[in-house]
Image (cartoon, rainbow, N blue to C red; front, top):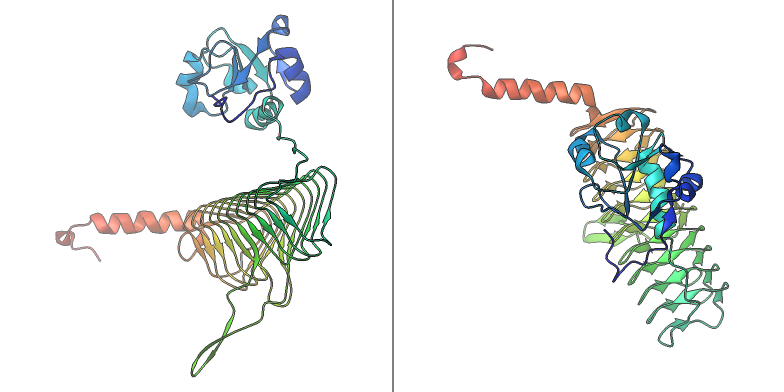
Length: 344
């Protein structure tokens, strides 16, 4: 349940209003006027809360929940549960996410420029931009309406930031053109120099990184992420992509639309990912590799060659998951053999 010191609920809402807003069907229509005041987990929800049941692993919690109402699917609603109202939908997690935004909408900007912020004379700020203490907006930068720049964040010279963006505290953004509705969490660096060196007999000579970072609309970037600018071309992050904490995107990488990269993913330079690629935590891709659309890569995998559309891969080096699991099972059987077995 949300801590009221940090989050302010817009509730209560009636079940009928919630159902209408998110397109769910209230199973007990006679309870349409019932008010719910907050959202909570199944095991913690009380008689004034709304919760979600989307996974059979939580069947016991569903049966024992004291929630006033629960969002779930028609199939899962047939499982035992208490006397709670049921909101039926095809995708309970997605609908619950929408309900969560009803109760806890995005915080609007304060329209305030703190005295401790610094804005260059030729920077352009849209309407209702908020600048926190220590924020810096350098020469020629442009920030769209209703965007929020966190404490000590630096928006570098010439950077363009779209409308309704949120930049977390201590972020550093340079050499970047960023779309609308983009969220970048604290301590993230966008547009830094890529890792490019030319070896010589006396050491390494750094190669100039003269490209940009292009970020689409509705992109979500976590804490402590590094996205390097291109060396000559651009580093690109497509619309609707989500990067978890501690992800590294090297120079000239191109991510398609709707990609999801979990924590500690690393992608080496000039690699291209298609649309809707999913990568598990700590997976890595070598440089100059092409990954197709709708590819799924298991956690801790190492990808060293091109991957066609729709593949599901894992392991090091990454191979189709069925083959990977067969190899793992075979190795486990071999490890269990005793020397006396006399088998080759």
